[in-house]
Amino acid sequence: MIFSQKKYGVISLGCDKNRVDTEKMLARLGTQNITQNMEDAEIIIVNTCAFLESARKEAIDTVLECNEFREKGKLEKIVMTGCLSQKFIGELYDEFTEVDVFLGIADYDLLPEAIERAYSGERVNFVGKKGEFKAEKRVITTPLHFAYLKIADGCNNHCTYCLIPYIRGKYRSESEDDLIAEARDLGGVEELILVAQDITRYGEDIYGKPKLVELLKKLSALENVKSIRLLYCYPDMITDELIEEIKTNDKIIKYIDIPLQHADDEVLKRMNRKGSYKAYEELICKLRKEIPGIAIRSTFIAGFPGESEENFENLLKFIKDMKLTNAGFFAYSKEKGTPAYKMKGHLPEKVKQKRVSMLYEAQRQISAGLVGKTVEVLTDGVDYEKGSFYGRAYFSAPDIDGKVYFTSDSDIEQGKRYNVRITSADDYDLYGETI
Image (tube, rainbow, N blue to C red; front, side, top):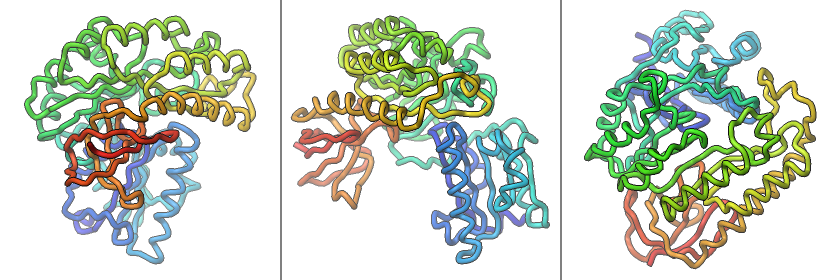
């Protein structure tokens, strides 16, 4: 086959869930001909994200940058896979002629065949042709001491601003047996990070009820898994049973990511979110009471259509009062095809960005409270530009939370833990030195 004779490179964009898809795709393709230097690649595969306009722009810009290697490198074919081609193939195929092959979110098995056709002179559109992708193996692309485990795909929540259900489809859990086998095959991992659009809903589609707690118990029994981190737990699905498991299971990191998105009741209703200011406040207080020291992370959208000054002030008050450990803030993105796209009251970009800045300033004041304290840091690597090591405390997940940059007079090993005294902080990151 032509594909097996070509050197190829892969670029994975977007979220950690997309990364897992890329890792499974790599296992299917084989890594004997893979290169990390795109100038040496004869085929470049770009696994795309399409969640926001900014993500779509990044994907298109990445393909255009790769296309430059046709003249000054060895590049012969460009393949686009993932969310952007899945959702927007009707707009992309005729216009985006730089791409030789298009595949969707579940068509990775067809990649060798698509490449063969492309080399025979065809321009290939296999989006949606396969419709299912199951892979038993992965090629881990994270540092060896942590890995992601995607336990489900799709979403049933239908928030009015979100494209995910229209791209990824209905919520679909992986089987418990498959997940246990996949986690075991990862080898020794210091940190296993569970991801899905909503991990708290795990199992309800195939077992008739949520089974996250049962899955956590079985994953915790694996000797190769040292700790487990939970991302993307929807607030209305955080049960007493789950709280008790986080509290009593020593392998579960005392950290939880709860995407609240807003705190004003009117805005939450327009978002089609089930929560309220009071319900969110009570949940956070309950988590802190039951699990002392738990790190709570969330994300929030500023400038949703119709968000008044009063609505925003409620959100800002919530951020200041709740003092979440970590928070990400985003300006509302107008996504065609979502209900919010047609809502009245869209705000100017300048107003949205100003509100995001105000939220980040409030959160920065909270983060500054860690200066002078000592935290245990799991070392992820070295930043040569900053001249320091970097890693994460228990209250930080990779990529989405800030890093801890630190110096040391002693030898430091990746994947090991060290006590670091925090000496300063900025909007996102902490800085310190080992003690």
